[in-house]
Image 1 (cartoon, rainbow, N blue to C red):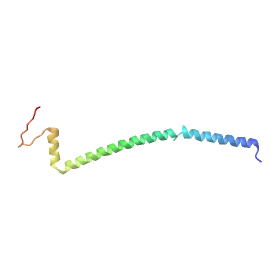
Image 2 (cartoon, helix red, strand yellow):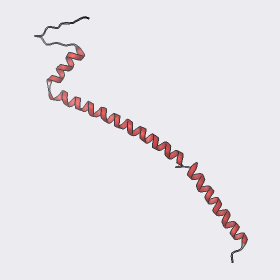
Image 3 (spheres, helix red, strand yellow):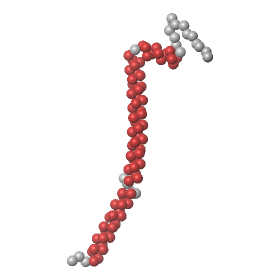
Length: 95
């Protein structure tokens, strides 16, 4: 039969292991709260990356549009720079 001091030692070791693993689970490296923080940060970074990808796609489409034809360049010159063609007359309406 197993002696009483050996059983007490075994129980103490088991309790210490349980305490150790509970500590690591709740407070140590890769704890529950730390994983939750990492997930929130990952969600934020994923959202930022998606927004930047959409912006890049928009800019890329604009670059392709500018490369394809003069109509886009002419439109931008008219609206952003206020340019007109030689044969056109500019009228400004004041309200």
